[in-house]
Amino acid sequence: MEFPQTTLDIDTLYSQDYEGQSVLLHGYLDKRDDMGKELSFARLYDHTMGRTIQLLSNSQSNTLPQLKKISRGSPVVVQGTVKRRVTKTAEEERNDYLEIALESIQPLNEFPREIVLFGKNIIHPPKHRHLQLRSDKELRDALRFRAQARNVCRETLEQLKPAFVE
Image (cartoon, rainbow, N blue to C red; front, side):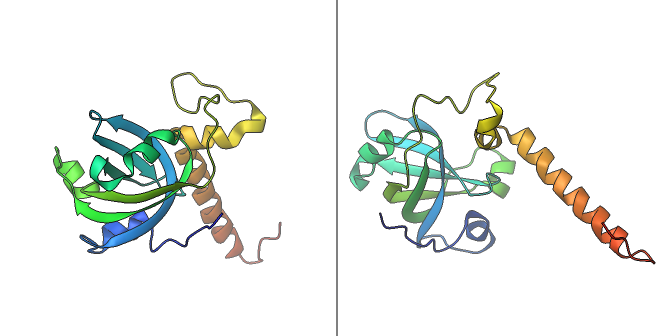
């Protein structure tokens, strides 16, 4: 299987003007909303699970059947054209104003359909902690905060005289 290199990440996409350009992104496929037989929207999470972008697929792009076959949570490579999307709120206009009109989508490996990743009150066993991290934003945020706090404490302790030794 070919694993194509990304051209950029979602944060870079929002920080510079890429509108109208073709891009290649890696990420995790999130919820898909089908609008009839000829139009579908989905969200793509980046590798940090911290940022998303909307994907647009229609019958003219020939990506619709492939998108519908890929299960939620699967890692994918998407290629498409960056477009400005219609936003409903001022917050969306600031943070979520772009979408990718799909030209191709390739699953890197298929997420098993029998594993329920998203939903209320889903508890994963300890051996599947990686699934919990992918599906629970509060847990991801708490772990990021803990890592940042640890880094601040370590830097402060290392500046002490005599130096802190673990």
